[in-house]
Length: 165
Image (cartoon, one colour):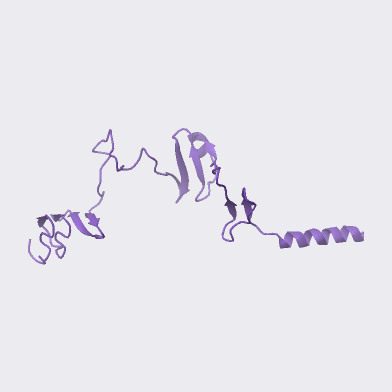
């Protein structure tokens, strides 16, 4: 009986001293203190669960932040604000090398509300288009002007203009 109590006490001590962290490493290092799961490797990657669209949509009560690879769509999906979102891949978004097969009614740079469209260079105004008739193109063009119905085109054009339409 003493051995049974000793075994139970030993197990309880081991459990109380263990950490709720896991390290999967190739070098035997301990997990980072801020991580629940720490995966380290210099020769292999992390493989996210792969499933079809139907399988992904059939997940019961998916948690916020859940991530899977949708093999039907060929994209990574994650759960955010109660809906599945798709991570942008190389076939989505505007590419620095250009885009092909664009449809102007679906693919555009701009806003879908009355917010002005703004371009910046070195964090300074370099272009603005607004629904109030303000059109500015050029580095620092219309810098001091937020009036309506003005058009300035060129480097610093209308820079000091503060009134008028």
